[in-house]
Image (cartoon, one colour):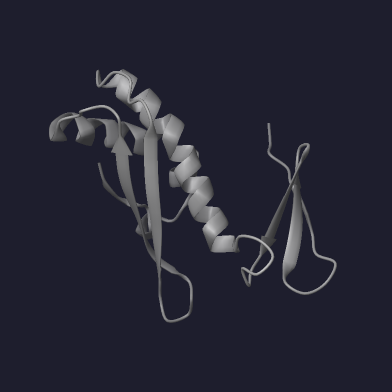
Length: 126
């Protein structure tokens, strides 16, 4: 099995990516759409949501309800990602020990987390 996308740029820095039946426009300059790093942060956080839900069930934390992930990417002097931080809020009241177990399991489940080089894995506060 594989995942396939097609990205086309007619000119400049704007590119449209076809993902199955969806078109996503990204602009590395951030003027006509999200920039590429914002898109990466969005993909990472979006992938982390189901990983948290499954991790919570598997670590006896129950249903988390609404999950909000504030993803922050700090840039270095070359405008490349130097670090990522997730600030996670849920409707559920989860103690610190259980939250750690959920995060550890979510890290194992999240495919974007797995794909990033380890020094860019998100620091997480839950």
